[in-house]
Amino acid sequence: MKIMKIKKLQPECNLATVRDGRGGIFTFYPDKPVVEFNFQFINKGKIRGNHYHPEFDEYYLFTSGHGAVVTKSDDGKKEEFLYVSAGDCIYIPQGVPHVTYAITDIRYVTFLTKKWNDCKTPIVHEDLGMGMGSHSDPNYQGPK
Image (cartoon, rainbow, N blue to C red; front, side, top):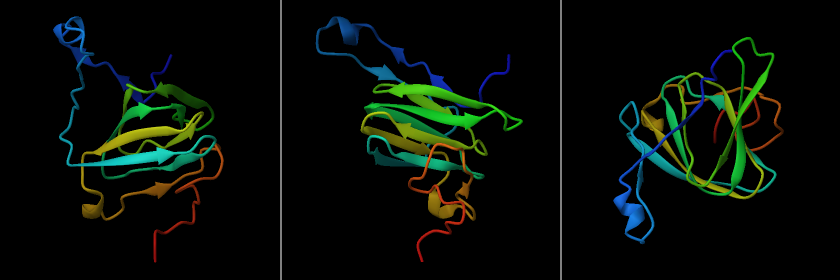
């Protein structure tokens, strides 16, 4: 069985932060340094994505909602997905096509390993078959 390139990260936790009754602190450790982060919204039934990033890796930390992050197998014949919800953190390597579909309204923070404005080609559009949404038009060239 082939392992999907997009993966969920498992946080570490000092359980004393749970036992003390105040909640908990869960820590994620990215493999590469993060240099930019963005707070994003996707409304229920909409998507964001249908693209890949040729110059950086991306991490998503979901703060609310439920959704599915979809990619395709290496041969492009099979859809692969991760169910995501609040507290999940996923890693998307550079060059891996992805689209996020919102089952409910979603809020999340994306972390980039290279600044968007420092990229010659920050995004390449690719239709992953999950519908139309922001950045889903393969002919989109960015704001004029």
